[in-house]
Length: 321
Ligand code: GLU
Image 1 (cartoon, helix red, strand yellow):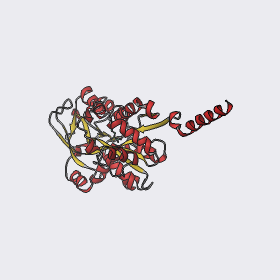
Image 2 (tube, rainbow, N blue to C red):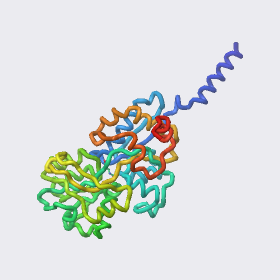
Image 3 (spheres, rainbow, N blue to C red):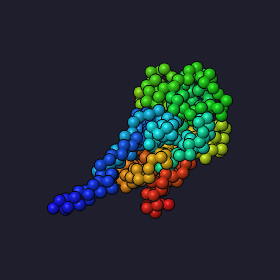
Image 4 (cartoon, rainbow, N blue to C red):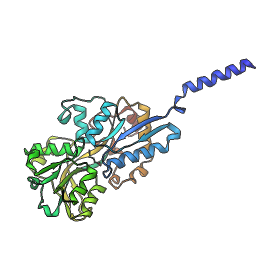
């Protein structure tokens, strides 16, 4: 009898040792953006779908608000976050160690997981400011975005292309995306910039709380940026989406992408990707900016870092690659 017990005990010990997943929870974090943007919803939506399957994989996902793309890429590099949402231009530069990332060098551990919605570079100006084109921003009070946000970086790229510096504005403020619509409507600034998917709550807030318009961003410098860089494309913000802007607005834009690191294990990313694509209709329904998403585009467009092994495993299983 004692022998039987010992064997049974050993078997139990062995099964515990070989199935750590049954006991250990894996906590993962997703870097997003401001609370009134779309990145926050991307992260919250991914985590919602992941956490629904927690009894199967024991992964617990959280998606706090952050400073945006560049902050997320830095946090992933430092190992402070496992995943994050980032603009395609900043994904490219982080992986290649160019532009803003030149000083710190290339992050060759960065991995693409999938791309999400398009993000037009969006300028909104108070109607009483007299701003009708991007060039009219010279001499005005402009919120150029918080350091760490994608829009701040992309605004700086455009300012460089035009030969402008902060001194060309009467005020260059650095408010976060969640604060800027109120600053616009409180007449603390004349215009705000946001690289963001449409429609979104932030631009709705700016255009319903006061008289404000979406401003076109076009011209030779913009055409050159699009022509020289694969991560930029011409973009249109549809008319009628926001109060005060009935016609389509031309601008340029990037794509939102979901990224991680090769330091995050294959199984974890596989389970996260599976949670999203096994429940894709539900995911798409979580924000109107996701309405036109298609898996075949999401696994190819706008990804300059290599695909994470866990993502590639799921896409191969599906026959998508
Ligand atoms: N594109 C912005 C950024 O990178 C964030 C947009 C959003 O919050 O949806 O910082």
